[in-house]
Length: 100
Image (tube, rainbow, N blue to C red):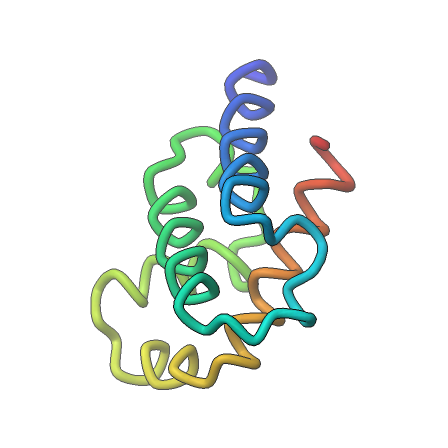
């Protein structure tokens, strides 16, 4: 189980590296790549099986689930790009600290 968690966490961290947003989310003015990264990370968290059970539910899992269910409150919250940046930064830091 721990191996699966590590693989799923590394997969998400690799998404950040792929979009070259590994640690510089606040420096970007490229909204398109930020939005793409956001969508990819939300999808990856929703698709994870074991990692999802280890992540803080209220901070990461629940928002991702509600965004995919098109909850108006959560979708509206994340329309603000600074909220996306904070969210993505928190996920990145959490995963990096525990699994990176």
